[in-house]
Image (cartoon, rainbow, N blue to C red; front, side, top):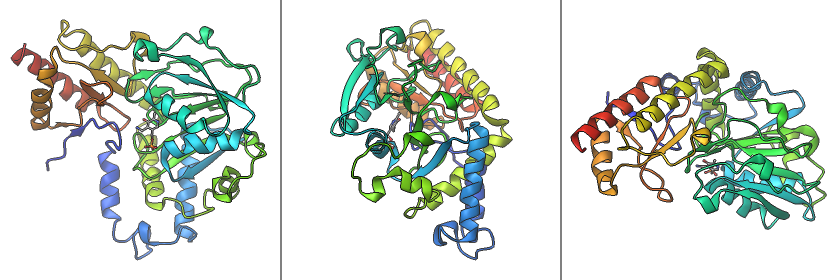
Length: 361
Ligand code: PMP
């Protein structure tokens, strides 16, 4: 067995028990005499599997009844365009708060669809901190405020939900989906790709307050009209059935872990372990993000000299630690420590880092 600890930013590590169950059920699923990938999404077995995943997600995240949970294709990026289309008309204004790369991308996808305002941006400072909420230039009567609670590349995470009054908050939670308890009722929309904390790529999930849909007044192709997915239990067209099935297994695993409170507590411990290793390395390793804005999910760090990056990655791989190369926009290293990364994996990384620093000091 040569499975390694995988620190990839996404698609990312899945719980091993989930992969084993997928393997066991690959040829014959639920007495269907076929795999889950080979049966109709409208058949009883899949409809039940899909509904169970929705129930489990609603229970784990305590999603109120006045929210739809949509299971969609197209990733978070498609939703970054579909949501502005569905939440407001072309004359409306939406506020965007930029704390990294993905906020910028969401804004790019909204720009052709409605008026946009950059309410705050950390770009000038190199995205190492969250602009203070009190200084955000919010538009009175905006259709929504979009932000990215966890910026995957820059490793910046909000610890608190910003207060934007009555304007619906739209949050791209791709890289911190279900990573800790969250008060869903504070949001208009939570959305993200599944491929970090929840399952394989190919599935995106949107948790949308019901009253926000169907008010945009635009002529949309029916497939872009999220109301149609909401009315059809996300089966207006063929959903990503395999990814939805794996999501269901990941959610069962999450329940076995003790739910979001236990998962959040473990994520906090994992992040503390890694950040203290960085901060306690006598300046050998360095993380540039303001301590209060440091992500529990994605931890970028630098070595004393970029020439050490290659040996670090090679030796890490040999030690069974994968996916540590930083995003090219930031450089250095990045350890993504999503829900499925066990504490032992972070401990192995921290041990390796100390050993590497000793040998290459
Ligand atoms: N938003 C965030 C925060 C992300 O991390 C990513 C993917 N890394 C995306 C959006 C884009 O997601 P997708 O590839 O599913 O469109």
